[in-house]
Length: 333
Image 1 (spheres, rainbow, N blue to C red):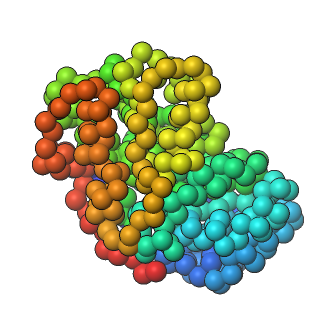
Image 2: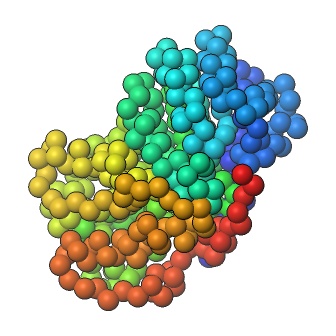
């Protein structure tokens, strides 16, 4: 049984920040929802509540960074770029300030509907000069991303998993390095965030049918580990990307751009939200409805290979890595 870690970010931040007095924890009225309520209570001198005023929080953080502080901003991912985009550009990105934007509930991991679902955040942040983009895919990466983000000279945007998070990996977050999950000769699968677990659910049924999957997990989206991707893509019968994001501008676009620039003539299937907003519903329901789950990956691989693999959903459920976090109760919004 895979270990499920409860509130890994909160524990990691409290272990990380107190020994670094210039690190400040900023909250936009979502303190407990971003797992920093314990830090607020035990380390009030390093905590600032900015309220539901994200534009002001961006400008304030830029000023703090200019004075040598290292602010970590905590709110839902969608509120870090839609409302305060102008302040994000002018107070943080353009002057290249060391501000860390910790974005919780990325993509369709929230039941809150379009107002709370950051489905185009990677596309937006990729277009901003000086911006680094990181994404956590399991509890180990959540626990180890803070030092990685803090070491970067400039602004960093992090998609953070919260609540009950499975531990999929035994080694820490590695900056700008694609993680090799499995090696096979038929199809390259590239995933990020919660989509990586979905690909792992499909691994055994595919292997049982003699399909060799080369699986790469991406935790750094800007910059991107181009060399590992190119090496893994050569000689494959096809490439599939799977992401908790719109297929326009995110991981699928990244992979497509690199394959084209390198002249690698291989078929590509991009799985994610296809030019649509999502409903407000549970994560498993939304992943199934919009084709972001293990069964959608199997269909894409069948399409690339031109054959029916006859993999039932029950086989995918049988190798599910946990039964807790995917049925996670709706959070307060």
